[in-house]
Length: 301
Image 1 (cartoon, rainbow, N blue to C red):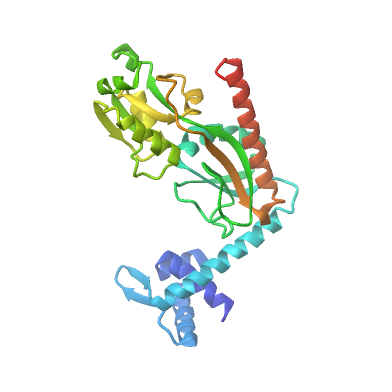
Image 2 (tube, rainbow, N blue to C red; image 1 turned 180 degrees about the vertical axis):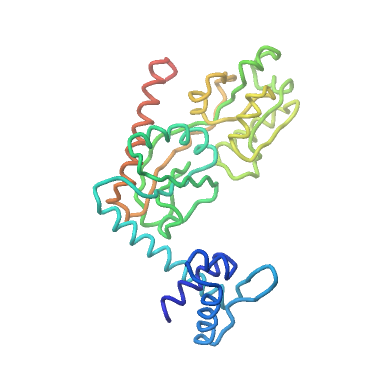
């Protein structure tokens, strides 16, 4: 098949519009339309359903789009490897991690990375869904469990626990809980056990619910849980690293915490020599070491 026609087809399928694809490719709508028509004739298949709101892929179109998507990702991977043969750290680095870790730990530290590498462009993708690194949905991932995908280089960064926190303001109007039974006098703020999260966090929430809290607020990510705690709504279940980032938090019931949650950094084997990956990996490790030193100085470990 003609590579140019496949490239144009992929752009149209991705945009859902001849006009938008033409803008992206710097081609006129009529030129794009002619290429799609020629490809359909060559394949003897209809690739799009046309309607007033745009274009929808047919079953045959979906099959072809899957193939061109795979080709596009492999070409991106090849281009990345070529760019990464240079000594300088620049260009785009697509980082994926969970919403909670990305907003509460990673994002506040990125100014230091940009200060060191001002030409680096970070595309931070915060998702509970595990992106496919070998298929280049992202370049590097930080996850709360060891990745199971093959052909990945992985490094264990640290271990975290889910713990219980309130705000300093909350303690001005409420007595601190001293035993699990005291939950009957407080509102619990946590992720729902049905939300995507680490198993250790869900298990801790199930355990806490057995104490019949007076009220409940569930949020689908830890950033939302933190906001509830900071607005004095109750006792929140949060990762332990948040306490270092938010001085207003006060830990309660310190004997209650989740089991250990390992944190891993992973990236594809083919990016082993990537200067951008190496810069990001070293940066994250340095920040973790610095955090541990700070905790020791504060007498918290």
